[in-house]
Image (cartoon, rainbow, N blue to C red; front, side, top):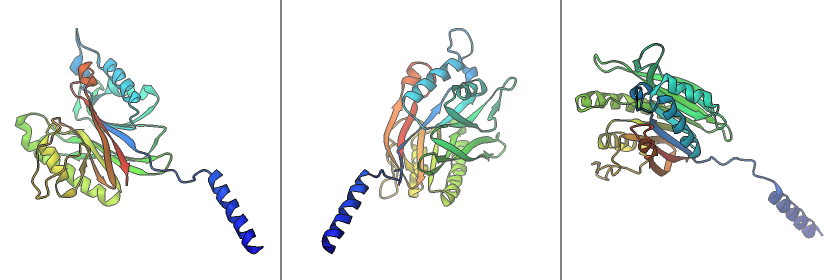
Length: 271
């Protein structure tokens, strides 16, 4: 009798377990991107596409791609207003990298889907190299609304041009030290941006296992750096318990003259 009663109880528990939904929410894969939007003032004038229009068109495609977090560079105030007026995004802008006419300024920013993420904190890295102007790099700590997972994101735009190679190298070192610091405090860290370099950036940030590249790039076993494979200057790197999949370079943004850069994106997965 006891055996039959125990068997009946076990069967009831098993049946109830099959009907009971999972309580724990699995950590989702999140698609993160980097996009140099091409500043608003750069396409003023006859025959050009207004920067607000470019931003609205870009935003439509970004939303269609179901992106969750996007690091932005060269974002000017009129373009920032387009994002804020969209209603689906939260935006954090760093201090001006360049002050333009009136209240308009350009610089780095990060936006995220407001239904998916809550901002826990936001701050900036103010980077000065020698007597050059200070660059301002936004950093946000986000918490997922479903599972509570947290991720830190930093968006950067390093100087362009062969004459600024030393400045870029110095900026990379500052950024690397900040990533090391963030990695000590947070499990998931993302670095996205326009590095204005290809192999130099890939090699620098992945050497010694500091970060993973969303492209799949990694140094050779002997520590030397192979060619990057991907020829662009826009990158996504991750530190901590993060994996990547689905790297994509969307050149629609260039082809339709919304920007002079593609949008690069990848899924990152919590480990």
